[in-house]
Every structure is written in C-alpha cells, then in structure tokens.
Length: 434
Image (cartoon, rainbow, N blue to C red):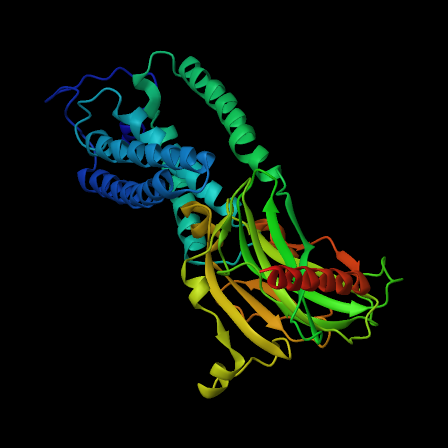
C-alpha cells in the first residue's frame, strides 16, 4: 500500500534504507488520525454493548435473554481488545495479529449495528436508530480500508480459520434461537377462571338470602402472567337463557374485583381464589342466579410491570379534585383507572423498542360493568375506542395481552331459597336442643 501511494510500479525491486519493518515511511499525521478515529469508533460501541450485555446477563426475564446478554457482553469485550490492537496496527505493528483483531472488531460493530437496525424495523425512529446508522457507516468505511490493506495477512490460512469459526457459530446460534427464544415465545399461556355457588343462608327474618360465590383464576400453563384487572358479575333473571353471552333480561345484583392487588403475578400451577357473599332479597323476582368472571392478563416473560402499578389506581373523583379529569378519548362512566409504564423483557429490546405504557379502566356500564385496556408508547396519547378495543393489535400480540372470560355458573333461585331455609331451620333446631 505504501509503495502504491508512492507511485512505484508493481514488481519493481525495492531496497529499504534507513530502518527495518518497525519503521513507517508514510504520512504519520494521516495514519495517526485514522487510528484515532477508529479507536474512538471502537470505544463507543464497546461501551454500549457492555452496558446492554451486563444488564441482560443479570436481569433478563428468560434464560435465552441472559445467554444473549452474555453474548453481547463478550462482543463488547472483543471490541475493547480490537481498540487496543488499533494502537499497535496504526503505529509500529509489533503484534503480528493486530490487523486481524482490528478486522474482527469492525465485523462485530457491523453485525451489532445491523442487528440493532433490523430490530427497529416497524418501531419508532429514536436516538438509538441514529447511533446504529452512524456505527454501520463507520464500520463499512473501516472495513473497506482494512480489506485494501490486507489486514488478515498475519494469518497463515485465513480462509480455513474463517470457515471453521463461522459454521459452528451459525449452527449453535440457530439451535439456541430455537430452543431458548422461539419455543418459549410460541408457547401460549393457559389461564382458567370461573365461579361456583357454595353455601346459602338466611338472615333469620326471611327477608334476605345470603349466597356465597367462590371465584377463582388459575394458571394451568407454563407461562407466568400479570393479572392487570379482574371483575365478576352476579345477575338474576330468567332460567331458560343459557347460551347467550350477556342477556339483556338479566339484572345486576352485585359486581366487584376478586384478584387483589391488581398487577399481582400468577405463576404456573398457582390459583387465586376469593369467596364473595351476596345479599339477595327473598322476594326478588328471579328464576335463576348467574355468576361469571373475567380477567385481563399479560405475559410476565415478555415485559416487566413495575410495583407502582398497584399504587397507580386513581378514581375519577380524585382526578376531578385535582382538576385533571378524564381525557376526551377515555371511556365514559369510568370508576377508576390504573396507569403505568412497562419495560421489555431485556435491555436490548428497551433500546430498540423503547418503553411502553399501559392503562386499565374500570367502567360502570349499566347492568354489565367492564374492564377496558389500552397500550401505547409513552410519547403517544392513549386513545381508546370501545367499538374497536384492540386498535393496537401489534403491541397486544407482542406482550401477550389477553382477556380471559370465565365459565358461567347458574343455579335456580328457588333452590338457593330452599337451601337457605333448611340451613336456617337446622340452626334453629340446634339452638332449641341446647
């Protein structure tokens, strides 16, 4: 390269005078400037990769995420080695393999910046996108310069070494991606919920029937989930309606929340249950009593819900006193809402996707109160449309947000009255015998 820049013809006999292989008879300022720029270009991505790798190796939610964190951390350390080799390659070249180390560092920067841009396809353009583009252009320019100077010529068989390193790495990466990323991602959570009528009693005057309803949600799958919100309904109505989802002829007796605190984790094999005691007037004109549950869950292996989600609940009355109120596009008749930022399952996803925000409303909707959920990036304004609740299907699929409708329990009201009467008579007999 030096002879070509000096204008000497190829194949001409050259006799060196005044030094050996440690002497650089070239433009010193230009060479050191290129080496300095390349050194800075190595240090910046090395710091970024070490930061991401260190965070994911400790705190990633999945085993595959932690393995990826260790891989990113190793890549960052290799770039640091390349930055140290830069000082030798662009100075005296005392180390035989300094050019190879620099070339490997450039390749790692190219692969890292390319991967960062690929992960950001379809996401919001942010500062990390600009940084990745800068690193990509710099690695391409540095790679061209190193290829022209044949930086690998310190190796005896560079082709064989490259093939021997690339093929096993590629096979191991495919196996790891399938076993630790694709299989857990494709596994679907199995959440079961429902209601059951239990014991019944009377108040002693014959005016009220007390019915105990057992409410539960159970994780029968292999994926832990956060329970964002829960609701149950107790209705009374005719006995001949069993197939309709929400018959208008049923009248609400009671509704409430049965998974507390909101945002708690439901692990595989775990069940959360609560018994609710409902008062029903003895003279109520009901043929049947119906109980049903509904919960909203989101996958714990794909995101982190902060502990502050539980404390984020605020009622509409509190918002009104604060002079804020609900937004113009939030659901009407909201009773309270929870709002929180959520993080991705790994630091690399936080870098490429950014954090998201989730909001859960409890809406008083006549005979059928409901829960509404929406997600969006923090910079965007959450817009909820009750006619199209899943407007952001991409984020819903990404984090595994799901609505689980529980099985319906229905029993004749007359049967509950008879059970309450027999229980009351039995209690009276016990007292008289004493």
